[in-house]
Length: 306
Image (cartoon, rainbow, N blue to C red; front, side, top):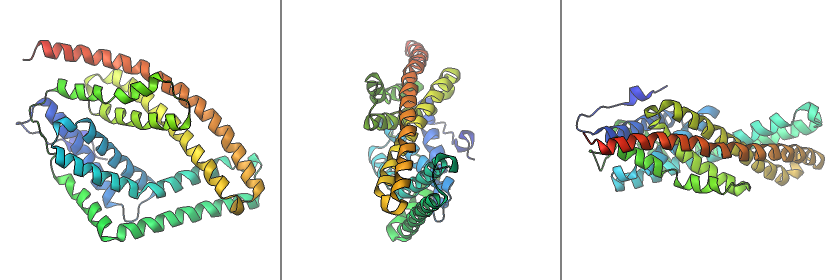
């Protein structure tokens, strides 16, 4: 596994803040290159890691955009979005299969024949998703995109500012929380609202990870709450999507199997929704502690520029 230490490329011409941003981007470039190199025949984990690396890098480019070359950032983010979308169907098929087979245990009322039909339908979906991925990656445009992203691991980030101090970086990290705070204060409960919150919290987490070592204890608490909230909201969204798939595949699964599965999913969705709402509410308290600690540091830095 690539570590932050391995990814650092110290440049004496860069101020501390600019160096921090360059290190964070460089680390994700290396991770993405590793994932891109395995994209021809990816495992379940490869697909997941590839999408995470692309989303994480794209998010960092957005957070620290004011310190980066605008054109380079814009084009890079477009390529990263295309790469992440390439694996979307495969990842969704894997998650759907894991969720439904985990719920459809023999002790939950599903007959053996019904479970066999479910397993076959899910495997067909996974097979088709992977076949489609292989076809797509075989196209010249996709092949060139993957090759280019892998090659960029050797290119340093294009900085528009080399004189950024850590206070500048921390200010941008704080700014990345604006949308998430606005959504959290509304106490979202609907599926669409929770999904929007999850995306905002991911962006916050990726930004926070780049500076977490500045206040490690406070940051660790906030990161734990962010991950937990994201996981619960993500699981809730996966359950809603699984219910939709089951309803669409009633003919294949059989009416009784469809009814049993939707009942299991509805009960599961209710628990996850309640847990997601509860976990999300706890993020704000941890954020307030983080921001108080960081503002003390930034205030001290501004009063003592030396």
